[in-house]
Image (cartoon, rainbow, N blue to C red; front, side):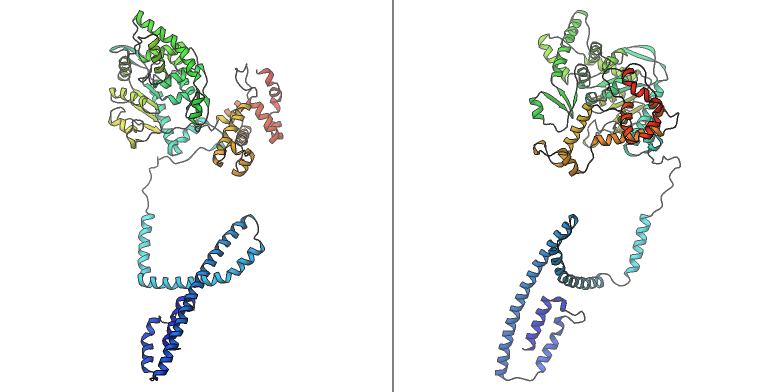
Length: 616
């Protein structure tokens, strides 16, 4: 074999088997001049010998090419084998979490280790050579000093000393429930909790300032009709309350009714739904459903869905039967007595006719709180007026009279404060009325609207300042309010009906999480075990037992403990569960820690056992 053939074979060997290269050996192309020199300095051969040598070289070269092709095929097969080995190793490692590796898998993995290590070592050597070449090319000597200066500059930027915080700045700290449940302290802790809790704390302070000014009675001009005023002693701050209809549809209605019942607000603004839903609830119930209930099926059953609330359509049938005679009487008084009806007068009349202490507008009528609804026809009330216009036409509602009245209430008030729950029409109607007096002195917005779309609902209080709807020197607050039910649920006695509803709602949610339905016929216990969650009712019981522990450990004199130990007198109202909270605690706590319960309730054992007979 001639020298050139050997050289070609050596090049092929370097290409196919890079691990046999020596790091000290020069690249192949650097030996080309030496090869040419050896060929030129070698003694001349005879033509016949040269031809034979050339033929042998060609044959050797062909064999080298074949060997090179075979080597490439072998290398490709090795890569495929390595890929299969990796997949097998991955499967084996996954199975190892569940059970031990089978003997055949372990032995197969052991056989793959030498080839895998040799391949890894070759790749590491190649990576080291490449990194050495890159580092010597792109990172010259003396780079460590430059890196130190760059790190030093970065350190100065990141660890830059801050300015001194004013000493009176509140520190973030939440409420410590180890001290028991103190409602006043809990509400005060919202100020230092952060995020929306702090906004809620600011809203509470702003409303407290409204109430403080409202208690300062002053002599002001009171508006009776448009342009007619009289002197009277009025609160130092007139509070405008606005809310959307969904709050009346939900359980927040009872909180709003409490405000109207105790005359804690002076003016109310709401939508048509905020009027009719309150009246309908006095005639029929609204039920809890689910946000995901299909509308097609509900429509076929004549059930209306408001979020996750269900309103049977029969409720509106009862509302129509109750409302039509009232509309007849209003038309009669309009024709015979010349009564000029406005939306606020109509709401006042409906509150009188409903005669139900559960109604917001019953108490607004009793306490003479004006209720404005500029879009009173936008709802079921409008539907009923439409149907009534064919039966007995002629009813007229004067909306101009109401706009005169609400604007005059704002203009002649000593100060005004606005509390707006929600957005849209009620928010703008109250704010626009206060623009007549250069803005409200106190303002609280409670909504989830954002201002990026330019909507009135999402506008921040500062935008209202630019319109003159809020005073420049006011401290308005916007908050996203979520009722903090951290206390009341611990004292509820869950009836069997409530427990079954909670369990059904929980399993409906868990089935959606698991991607299953009732048609899959999978037991609830299997779904719980698969998801790894405890029953909600069990967690409620644990929470109640923890709260019982707080009550038992409370020293004498603490209000929650005294209330817990006290025994109510008199008859319980209808509709309450037969099993009281104390009966429920006594039954469950006896199982968990009987000695502690026996010692704590020893003085009250006779009252607890006789409670069902004496406290009915």
